[in-house]
Amino acid sequence: MMFFILAAALIALGTADDVHVFTDSNFASEVAKHDVVLVEFYAPWCGHCKRLAPEYEKAAAILKKADPPVPLAKVDCTVETDTCSKYGVSGYPTLKIFKKGEFSKEYDGPREAGGIVKTMNKEAGPVSKKLESVKDARDFLEKETVGVIGFFESETSSLAKNFLKVADQLSDLRFAHTLNEKVKEEFKATKEGITLFRPKVLQSKFEEAQVEITATSSSALKSSLQSESLGLCAERTTSNAGTFEKPLVVAYFNVDYTKNPKGTNYWRNRVMKVGKKLRDEGEQIYFAISGLDEMGRELEECGISNTDGDKPFVCAWDSQNKKFKMTEEFSLDSFEQFVRDFLAGKVEPFVKSEPVPESNDEPVKVVVGKNFDEIVNDKEKDVLIEFYAPWCGHCKSLAPKYDDLAKKLENEDSLVIAKMDATANDVPSPYEVRGFPTIYYAPKGSKNSPKKYEGGREVKDFIKYLAKESTDGLKGYDRDGKKKKKDKKTEL
Image (cartoon, rainbow, N blue to C red; front, top):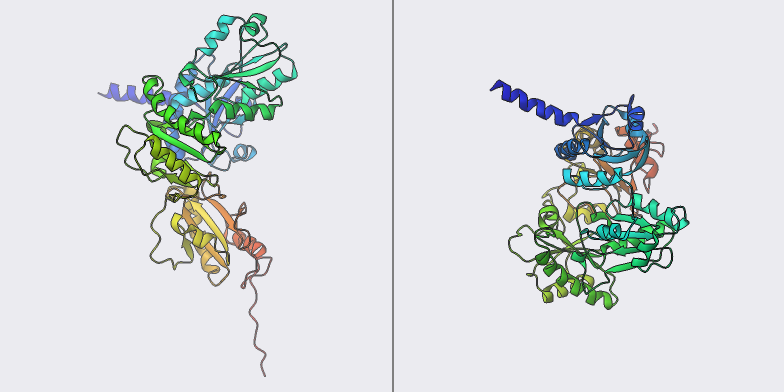
């Protein structure tokens, strides 16, 4: 029995050891040893980091045996503060890709083992496959994902250089290029150019199977490829969700292009039919499909909890990131009507919110989704608001200081000190919360442009900041944050 317990412990230890540990003292030298390495910057108390850990370890074990091997590493930002500060880490976990000892890019791919492996395998290989024959090209296009081919006279031409630069930046797309005349002849490429090819499984009568890309500069080329690769209705996943423009309408169902491509396209084509009709009418709107298993949590965020049944469920986002749910059962007619009503502003947005507090008399006001506008966007008052997570260690450390601050300023009639649990309530635009705690200051005259608070976390730091920034000044403190002296009555 002891043998099996020891064996299990050794297996677990081996998995954990697959993730390299970098410190302030060895970071530069360790990163320089590898052509490409993925580094996680984390805090031990961070809930998101704890959820990522087993997936990160699984990916590390797989990538250790890849050809070429791709190391995964981690840095504890509560200890290795110099390194984390150098690379601008402000939230956890933050993942960054380093190549040949230098920072390359932010990792914005999936955070589950399979997705990490797929993304990092691509990062380790050539950014674009060189096609030496027609067979190479055909094999490249046989895959069931979008492919991009550059047809060049030379790999040193301006267009080729920009193509390779963009290929390194867009890990979700497959890139290939060729100088071969027979390949160019096969695809009727009579001059330098770039073509995006949709795989057979995604081809539809509602859009072209291949698209000639006319952009030439790297920025324009990147933007064009991102947009065209999504097409009229792409599959939206954890790895590419951030690339979709808004307003966006997403249909959620059992998307499976491996086991059930016909069934998947049955629903996708219905979404595309409505999308094509509205696009032809001049509406600027975007569509996507998503798998319930991978992206279904978004439906809960949209107020849809019961996802039983075979038909799609629908959620939409406007340009302000407000959410709208379709309550009717999916059909061509109900879907089209929902999208038209959504565009016309006839659908009420769904707001994820805790109950509004029955009393809110404490010095720190409690903000939830449903009273955010009433408290934070009050045009008569300046507001300092902390977005926190209940499990966040830094938030727990800040709490008594934040309470003390509010007590010291509770007689300031034109200022509100507030807090919001950002894990249980929607955070509206333009506020962005990527780590905890995140603190914003919203002056009463600039509610659309709140300022992110980047100062110290002691009470005196907050007071000094508010005394300086407050619209009308503070009654109890001068502009330098020093407490005002009370006037003494003159004795007769």
